[in-house]
Amino acid sequence: MAGIRLPEVWLNGEKMSKRTAVVAATGVATVLAAGLAGCGLQPGSGPTPAVPSQTVSTPAVTPSASVTPSVSVTSPSATPTAALVKATGQLTFFKSNLVSKAFTGTCAVVGGKPTVTLADHKNDFYNTVDLTIVLVADGGDVASIAGAFGEEGEKLVTRTLVHPDKGTSAKLVASGGEYRISGNGMLYENGSKNGTLIPYSIIAKCAKGDWIG
Image (tube, rainbow, N blue to C red; front, side, top):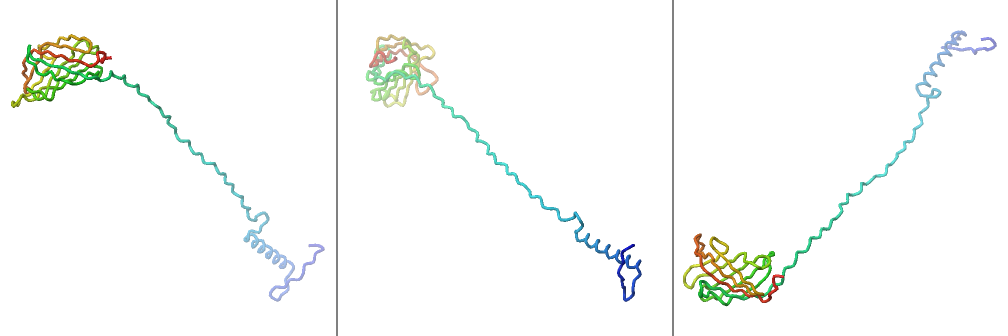
């Protein structure tokens, strides 16, 4: 090139020509460039700066517990029944066969039904006698009669008196707290299915005339 003097270049002890020197210089530059490229030092090829990662924390959402409303149920109070009162009574078979005149017991409204319960557990003839009389709600009629008689003396015979049953009857005459009942009842022995109609009369006295309420 004009105005530039290339220095003399020696190779292996011999002076190189200008062309040879140019070629040699060009080769050296190429080798240096390749080396620089291999080392990643080319312009604009430096290491990529790390981008800081950003962690976004989402607040944990705790679902609210399911709330079951409590329901208070108030049961209606049962209608109180009339107070229990003392009772006495007697039972006669046929016209004059007195079974007991020593009955004691109670008069009370049970399940909405006026009920007279009488017992003689020291009876001379049947050993024990129990009698239950159930009246209709207003006490104006007899709903049922049930009698249970223990063993008769030394005989191993038990009896039951039932009304209503086939052919039975019960006529009621009430006055205050006294109830007179007469009619025919079915008498069974030892649980037999065949009974006998027998006339009876009952007198039951409750200590208070207004016990039914």
